[in-house]
Image 1 (cartoon, rainbow over the protein chains, first blue to last red):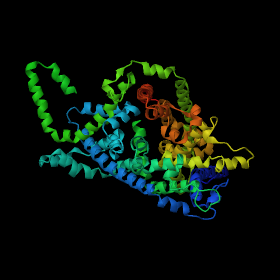
Image 2: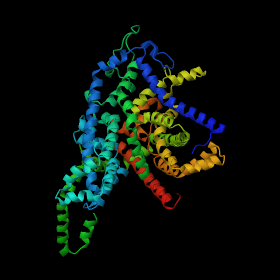
Image 3: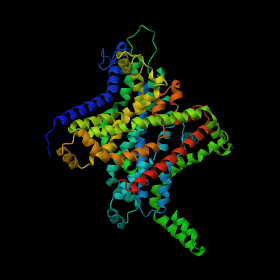
Length: 294
Length: 319
């Protein structure tokens, strides 16, 4: 049904559109500023101003970032941790979810309660920290993977999905004498690919952005993930990790710490910035399920 | 669980029979139990062991003696914390920042959802949404780095605008008067788009005939928002508000840790950052655990009561 727009409607739409466009500018502004800073010459970068258009186009900061061995090890560590986390997490979560999805599972109420209780009460930071120390996992990559192996919310989402798969699909297999693990691997997993892919994305982005566990448990700089490296460079301003030698005043042709910081942020965030528009819908799904469950 | 208690109630003669039956069930379900095992071990080690570790809140933890061997001190750690001047400021900072967050951060996404709902051009709507989600996908490490630069008194764009308008540059990151505002505004900036999803979903369920009828009756768009859109958002707003209040004691560690400096501890040191500094940096393990436990218990009570309230509202037909 098409209704003719009144003048009031037009004014409303225009103002509404302008405010929303302004919101977009506000959201993008810091990133444009960052990109422009990273491409600016050292002199213009340290000037007071807006920095929306790079002045004196200059890629030295990026050269410095790519020459920095720490950035490479950081990237490698983040990728390895993310991939391992996704694989191991999903293996353990789907197996557990499968067992809990079976109504006839012995002690099912107890097991479910055992899992759900941890959503309400946790030991807290220090007991977890001491646990990792006692397990001898300090400075070990496993300390970034094992403690977050199962996310209760994600696991329950997978379980709920398994529960929606009609029982008669597996009954035929049961008659043929297939055991539970065979049914899980050959019937349930292939049928649940949509939810598994969704949860895999959730885990991957969460792990890509994770930094606190690395800050707590990793001591050796070559084992740092990208985010912690970023923290050292951008927030602590550590020149040790910046591939930057402090120079005497006057030799201004080298990139400044500001341009290097900006370039480092861009280089480390680019993958997520490019990918998120295409994967956002899987995350929206999670918000909807989460809000329904409360 | 139920099966075990049932067994205990039965006579001893039948007991062995029941136990055998249970064993039979275990055997029959051995593959399911096997599937469950890695997850159960995970929960035992990484969730239940730290819960046991919480007892060091009541001990004077000593590394060499271990959790078991350390001496009991009763409530001493709690008394130390509650008696220290840190308690008042850390607790107040947590609540004040959460309160501002609630006051300004809660309505913001609702407003955005209403505005997005009024957009008739779908491509524009989709673009605004996608752009507004961007900061949600980035970590606070990245965003803190960006804001550090943007708010810098000597180079930052914000201070550039302030001086253009004739003001004096402000060092936001070290100024106790401004720092909480920085936290609240940057958090709204990060999450406004993402938080609007829930409200937008509620709005999209509204019957479009309502709007058409209102238009025919000559109701202006503002009137339509007031009398159609807002009323149908009341249930979801209520539920989200209840949950937000339930989280009032939870501070945003990721944001504050990456943005604060010692200069702003008086206004921005919150419970979680305090626990981190006391426990991990100063190695006051027992004290930090006690503070964390104190917060977790309050948080648990709040979450359980707000869940109960939300459930009641749902049951008694508020909607």
